[in-house]
Length: 249
Image 1 (tube, rainbow, N blue to C red):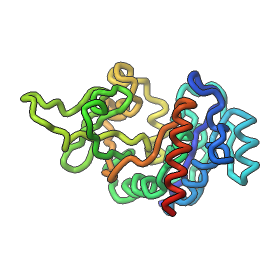
Image 2 (image 1 turned 90 degrees about the vertical axis):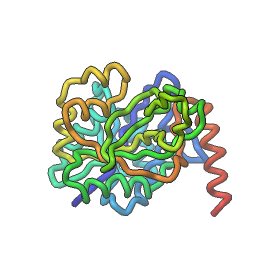
Image 3 (image 1 turned 120 degrees about the horizontal axis):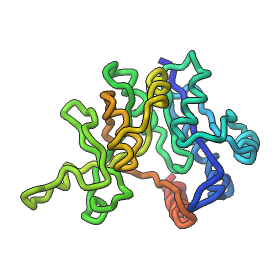
Image 4 (image 1 turned 60 degrees about the horizontal axis):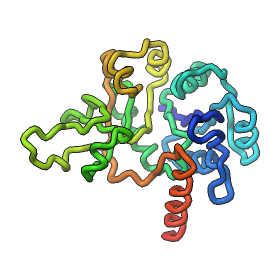
């Protein structure tokens, strides 16, 4: 099956305008994401999808491939679907977040590979163990529970499962790692679906798929070694983590 990676990138951001072009170790952050995605063995091609000429120029400057999209997309998934509509030869689309400069190519391979192996799954994503009381209570860290076959049952900003008797249930908490792979046909369908009630309540787009009856296969990864850059402070943390990774090589 043919799989490609698409990195949706926009310049506007309430907390960090222009973050795809923010300097990280002498290169724009989007370049780090692009180059790591290109190392994924499952992907035959990597594209940046943007509506901003500044981002497009930066991608072309480092030799990357970019596709210009409309400017009115409410989400990155909608931007992805616009690009996917013109890629009839592609089977699997991997949505790679443009603010994950330390993303592990092996995680991309694992999430993309699931769809090739399991015909029951319309889309796939990843999860990893979550420890620490503060992390489980943090609404910005999304939790997921899956069934015994690895299909997602629910995603929430609250700690799930909830240990009713007060016992420690830390071994069963899973953090959702926000990387998605879609069958192309399903992605086009998903983008046409109206936002669902649970999605609107939790502000979690993946709940739309579950509410409409589609199955999401989850891949267990050992740990989350990446970092989502939402603020300038996050960028400083990424600088530190990148320096540590380079020092270990």
